[in-house]
Amino acid sequence: MSDAFQGREGKPRRRGPRWPILATAAALSLAGCMAPGGGFDGEEGCRPQLTSFNAAGDAFLGNARRDPSGLLPLGTVPTNFGRSAETLDAELRQENAELDALQIAFDALLYCRWIEARLVRAELAAGRIARPVAESRMAALRSRLQRDLTRAQAVLDSLEQRASAREAALEAAAPGTREATRRARAETGATRRVVAAATVPLRLRPEAAAPEIGRVPAGQAVTVRPAQSGFALVEGQGGLRGYAPTGAFQIAERTARAVAGGGPLRQLAATNIARRDNFAESLGLAREAAVSGFELAS
Image (cartoon, rainbow, N blue to C red; front, top):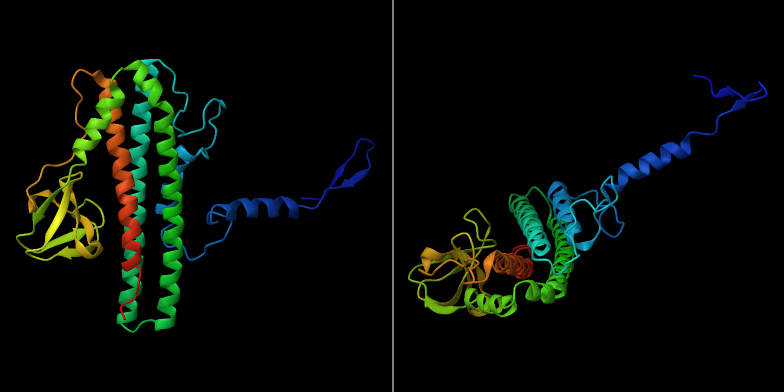
């Protein structure tokens, strides 16, 4: 194809250079590989999980794309908490769904990071990489994990701000919700002391397939608190912390308790609190696991 075209006077004119357009397209393509903050991370091994987690967090941090109509960012949880019970009901349901997606994405990213760390240790033990290389890779992993945890904390802060902002509207739409949810939170967060009858593995997340991050020796006293999915959050001496099946200690599972006489809005508020608490728990445990789980054996 010729680079010339006919002008209005019939004289040939030259097209402008194409390289600015190509350069712009290339820059846009590379933007999807940029780490938060603008740094290019060509060694990111958990790109799909990181992309999912960032997208889920955008719903609460206000970074989602606008929809074609321009009315509401795609995937963004509404913040217009009016006094209408129907409006609050719809908005809490959407936020709960977004919280489920956020938790799943965060769990998947943590698991991927943990597997990466295990792989570095395994390659070092097998003599496939030198220790300086392993130390460099593990340091990069810790840096990525800290970036993930910083973003997770920002999302959690936003969640708490949203909850605080809508508290008055919830109370007006369903009087007694504030006290009922406070009481439900206290009841579901109750802890008790138990003694492990046998050695109990502790896991990073309340899932049977989650990485093991520690063990409770037989005969050791620990504090347990009902969690989710049939697991309990276990805490012991020396900073020991993780999840174990409730059957190991015979305690009840934590669930969002129904609030008598409060109707569906109160129940939605209780389930929202349970989801936020679960995310906060997983963030706290990930911070602790980052200390010991991303180091090389001496």
